[in-house]
Image (tube, rainbow, N blue to C red; front, top):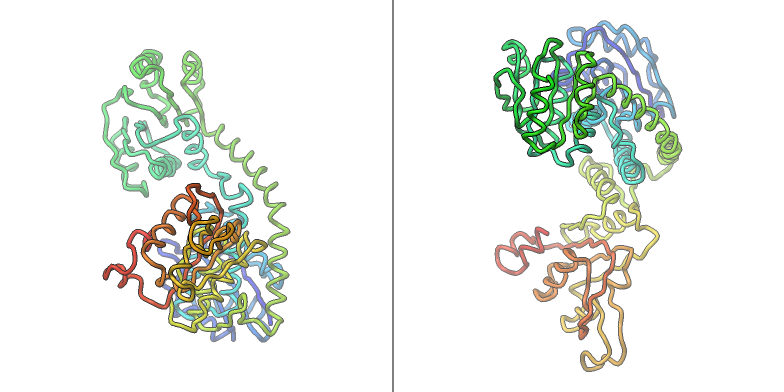
Length: 498
């Protein structure tokens, strides 16, 4: 059994719609010709990576390149450089690439591209349990990194750095006006980033051809207004790409600052002129930056991210070791006590991996005997609550008059037979997970109390006027159609959609 990855750099790469999007038949031909069990091709802006798995011996580098070049000669040939990665290195690179940690392109776009190519390969039956297992564990790893480090919040591109800077100065970008003079390739990405961050008002001053270029090349649907050649009184962010600009002189800047009561004013200048910076020093709330400043910030962030990666690297190594232990074991198709080889079961394993790293409330629906409790156990065991209680409640097996007390507890004397205080199951599950099986059997009045807990995080024991705060994750299951029950009035709609 072997996993290999071929990282190759063709002279010509067609990436506008993604190589895999139009190369599915070709990939099947590559898979057949090379005798591979599973194959995944991930495209980037300048580099392609082909992941290959086979129970037998995987072909050598030269055979793989020749097959690729012949099959995709109209799209990705000739291959000018290629690197074959094998064994543990290939598995490690899968985790790195799937999480956008290779630093070869924009992290967000890299992850999105990987997921798109993986999804298409799965739909086309190009991959099986092995690569799906790697993808499931990469999801789990991504959530661990996201929750425990700042890795994914470190900006490594001009647009991200400038938007982060704007957010620190203005706090919220929604009401801001952005004015631009002149156009550079970097301007498109900066404006796209500002748009995604909330900016909606964009003004343009300068040459009509630059204006046309800006409108055509921005990826976001920006409503850019062609503005007369002066600094607008409403401008909050000014991006200057015109070395001969006369918009930002002392008079216009003074007028703008006075008109907005010295509200913050951010300037991004690409011309290299220093006089603008001298102007802004006259105003304590005017901020001047050029692209060199942003590039310095990127270099600083790269160092920061490398430090964080040193912390993450042992996690990746641990995942690699676990993968090989799983690959050589008899439980290859076993996931947290659940056995499944079919694509649908592999999809289920992905979902479990994804939601287990969050605290969201989970509803599991399915016929009796389909393993709903197994799924709930898997979610708990993979979560950060795994060492804390997992409490199971069968809502249909407890008499209705006792169910409220069982769930939320009671105080002494609250009803006949209540001779002492009792802690309910929600209290017993504090810091852990409670599994409410047969949730459809929960009476309406208890549905209200459950809804309150999900919204406020507190419970009220029977007979008590005090509320108790508990930290419990709720997983519910039913073999009934709750949607139909809501329509018929048997289940609260607000609880169903909470």
